[in-house]
Amino acid sequence: MGRVLITDAETRFQNAFGCVPTARVFCPGRVNIIGEHIDYHGYGVLPMAIEKGTEILAAPNGKQEIRLVNVDDRYSPSSITLPSDWKGASPPQWFDYILCGWKGIIDKLGVEQIGFDMLVGGSIPPSSGLSSSSSLVCAAALITWMIHTGKIFEEITREELADLCATAEHYIGTQGGGMDQAVEVLAAEGKAMKIEFSPLQARPVSLPSLASFVVLHCGDTLNKAATSQYNERVAEGRIAGKLLLQGAGDLTAKSLRLKDVQEALGKSLEEMIVMCESLPEKASLEQLEERLGKDVVAQCLGPNTQQMTSFKLRSRARHVYSEADRVSKFEEACRNKDLVGMGKLMTESHESCAKDYECSCASMDILVDECIKAGALGARLTGAGWGGCAVALVENTHRADLGKKVLFQSEPSAGISASFL
Image 1: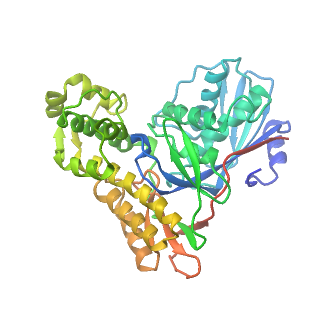
Image 2: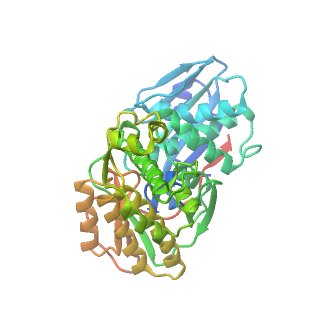
Image 3: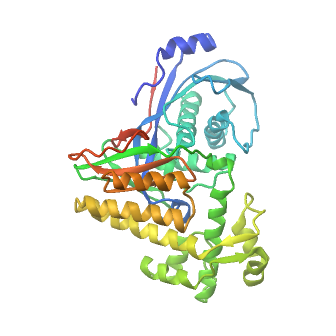
């Protein structure tokens, strides 16, 4: 089982609900080492699970309701009457992430909704880019499965659970690509994970023994599901892909992902980076509708970005293709135990996130620069960005004083775990 986060858990559960818990789940958070904002464009990423995570204890209550209590007093208790046709919430409150996981499992099983009590605790700083939200969703989904089936990973695989949870997060308005859920569910102890999509595949990646990763917080936070910026980047990438296809005289590709555009054109990543220079840096909605047609643009926008009237295209696509190339080179550097090369790629990744994808912020850029000056081999924002955390690569035989913003030094951890009590 994963780490125990809730002290005196059974006593606290009894005090809250008047009964003993029958099931427990621990789901880690994650830090993305490299490969930012490319999972939803179809490209593989290289994260690792961390020791911090979410712990949930639960028990059936024989009532027509789900009762939710968080051990952190900042989050108010909540309940939902059953049967419920909950369809999501935006912006979400803490318990909506729980209901995402619950809803995903209920939809899969198609069974009568069972009332149960749930005590939730977590050690991941919220809105920090360490995937506290997906950790909540995955933990809630697995414990819902356990309550309704009496089983753990029987009749559902880890891959199926990760995919289900990635889909379920759309209920709170986030169009993620599945990286967070995949690493949090599939991770192997002591390894980073190369996560590929469509189909979902996870492969362990050995990190050089001298490599150590330090996670720091820049001081600013942003809830990605509470802002349109994350979803705007999704739309801009889709439109850039349509323009690249149009420019090459190939409009047959149906998918909206930039990886599918690359495959349709039969180009290498390096060639796609060059092709991006043919894209306009900016375009208005009217210009795009005239060039691509209103139906194509509407398809690219989706329900969460209908308000957009101006788009950045060249720099967005260039980030995606160059970042996908850096992920491949980073894995090669890991195999070669090339710490300097790994660090250089991480820093280049941050520069691309800051300048081309514009998902950094001033305090993050300062923090990354301070890490490099203090002796880190490389550093970059991690997570959705616009605040939150940075990850820095240091050689563990050399002490690098990275200051007071260090949250923790992370070792690769195992994925989600569960037990009946």
